[in-house]
Image 1 (tube, rainbow, N blue to C red):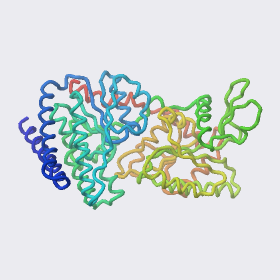
Image 2 (image 1 turned 180 degrees about the vertical axis):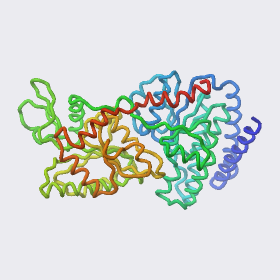
Image 3 (image 1 turned 135 degrees about the vertical axis):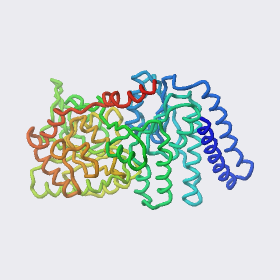
Image 4 (image 1 turned 45 degrees about the horizontal axis):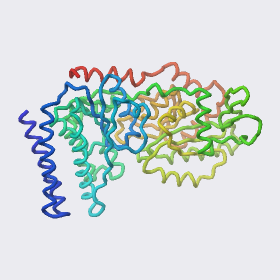
Length: 491
C-alpha cells in the first residue's frame, strides 16, 4: 500500500506540475499555483472519502469519454448492472438521447460532463496537451464527487486521458478498475495522423503503460484477447457484442407505423400512389386497408438496403456509393431488379462530406437518405430491411462491427467488407457475404436483390439460417461472462 500511495503522489505531482507550467505561460505566476492547489485539495478529500467507502457498496460507475447516446455497449452494461441490483453512475457526454430503458431506470443516474476543447491558438501539440489537461481535471473532479463505487467500468477508446485518471481515482478511493477494450485508441488516431506521428506514438505508449493497472479487462474478440496478452501482458475476458431482445424481426404492423413516421420526414418512404383517394394508407413499402385495418407489403415495392455508421475514417462509404452507381447501371442495362432505397443511419465527422457526394449522384432507380433515428426506432428499421451492408474496417483488425451484431439479432443478412477477424462474426455464404471492393459488392447486391420478393434463394436461406441458429442475447452473455468476475470479488 505504501508503494501505491507513493506512485499516486508522484503522478499527482506530475499532473500538477504540467498544468501549472501551462498556466504560468499563459497567465502568470499567481494562476499557475491553482492547479497544484486544486490537486492537493482533491487528494486530501479523496483520502478522507476512501476511509468510509469500499467494495461493500453495490454501486458501479460506467464511464465513456464520448456521447452516451451513441455508446450502446456501455448502455447495455449499465442496464445489466442495474438488473443485478447495482446502482449505476453513468458518466459521459450527453449529446444524443440515450435509450429510454436507460433514461427510465431508477437505478441509473446519468452524470454529464462537457467535451472540452482546450486552447485554440498555438502549436497543434500544445493545443492537444491543454485539452488533455483540462479533460483530466474535469474527469478527476467528476469521479471524486460521486460516492466511491465498487467498480469503475470504462470504455476504451477513447482512453486518453481516461485510463490514467480513472486508475488514479480508483487507487485513491479503493474502487476496482475495469477496462472494456473496444479497440486501440492509437490505431484510430493513426488513421488521421499516420503511425509515426508523435501523438500516435505517445498514445500507444500511454495505453500500454496504464492499461496494465486495471483489475479486470473485457474485450470484444478473441483476436484482441490474444493480442492484449501477447503484446501488452494484459489478461482479458472476451465479451462478444450481442444484441439485446429489442433487436428482432419487425411485424408488418410495426414496420408500417415506422414507415408512416419516416414518410413525413424522408421522401424515399413516400408512396408514389399516396394521392389516390381509395381509403388506403400507403408508404413506399407497406399499405394499410382503411376498412379492414390489415397491413400488407406494397406490390412492386423497392428493396430496403440498410447501413449504419459513425461516419469516421475506418469506414469508406465511397465503396457503397460506387456499388450503388453500378446497381443503377444494371437496371439501366435491362436487368430485372427492384428499385432500391438505401438508408444510412448515424452521426459523425464525415457525414457532410459524404452527403455532398450523395447529392451529386444522378440516380433514377436508387434513392439514398441519411437519417438519425431514435434509439427505439433503430431496431425496428433493422427488422424491416431486406439486406444490410457493413463497411467497417477495423483500425486494429481486432474489433468487430456492432452494427452487424444488431443486424443478425433482427435476422437481417449482411454484406460486409473483409478484414482480419471478421470471420468470428460473418460466415460467408451462411449468414451473409464478404466483399473486397465496390465491384464485388455491386455484384452481390445484384444477385441477392434480384430474388425479391421470392422466399427462396440465397438471401432467404441466409435469413433462415439466422432464425435457426439464433445467437446468444446480451443479457445471457453478460450474465455468463461479467457477473462471475464481480462475484469473484465478493461484490
